[in-house]
Image (cartoon, rainbow, N blue to C red; front, top):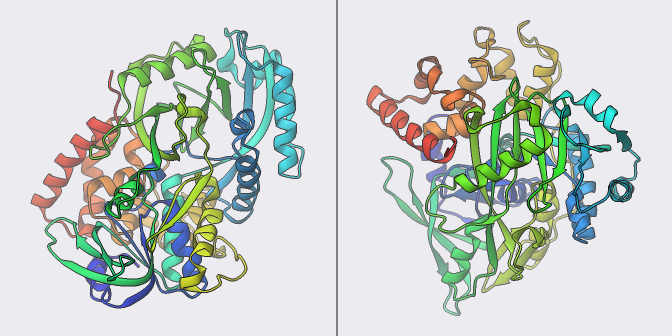
Length: 521
């Protein structure tokens, strides 16, 4: 679908009138493309960088109802999130899966232990199920030995869900394309086309992939701005005031052996009482997140030294016996969340509800959460009903995936479920690649996954491949560069890069990893 040469093929058919043009290839834009295509709309999605290269590949990897938002009185956000979480788990097995949490209480927490129970009762009631239970200190330590030596008082056990955020974007995009949508990365909206009365009627697109030099004017009934933290950049071109607050959330990851958890942990940070999460994910353990105002979006966001120290302080509170230090950090990442700016002094208290503005023919959707992307997509398309017509009833999020395949024996049952969830119908290629049924380093990634991604998933740069398609840059020491010879042998022939191109990409990737994905300490 996105194999070598797809860019020229897509570019050759851009010169038509579309029902809608979607700017932004994160989860919100992907959700809009998928919904629109499933309902017969001629939809085009473009992203100025790679698909999911912004916030949608840099989250805490949770599909959650937002338990912490109840504490802030954001009941509508929590109710919507809980219900969307349940639907995603029901339809996205292997991609969105249940995750047990231990909510741990400590001396000095602002919320006493009994208040956690009240909050969780409300949380479960919103999902129409009862799935939490109280835990004593002994219960917690028995379940999570890393708590030994801490002052944990006990807490509660409850359930949310876990995903690979970038793979969620690709699965949603892939199915949108299968239903007739069009999506292309590294195509920038240079400017907006406007009618004589000033209404937006299309965009001027520029191909910004390496060695590309072409532009085209493309028209549509409506243009949807789903560019996340960059949304105000387009709105201000029309003369409108900025509405968004850019808040950075940063994470650190550890080898599972260094921070061993079988389930997630939630606790309040000792400095500011914010909820933070320790999450087992893809064979590593991640911890986050921070909430700090972010500045310039031109540079790739990265964790600061202060944020790193802030996160390590909370880990010292929870797991003092592990004696974690900056040297133990495997990788880092930071994403910039767009939230509606209400002027609150504390970034954490800004609402996570999404907002939609229709201004001079440009429809902007921003804010919101990863969990609620389908609801956001339908709200955006409903707002464009005058231009697009009625949307129709909501359908499934994901198509059914094939289950009758002859898999290599080396790929175990849990891995098969994971691959079916992440790749959908494309999992057939993995199942038929007997030679690729070995893992890269000590990661969970199979060589066949890497080969498929390089061949058929719109990879333009080495960062696309290692940071978003197969996540090796997050899962292996030094961003996977210790295994670069093996990676090159598999990926270079599929990508069709000559040696000079590979060397340039490798050098650029090294710099990107050092700047934005390694520890600053």
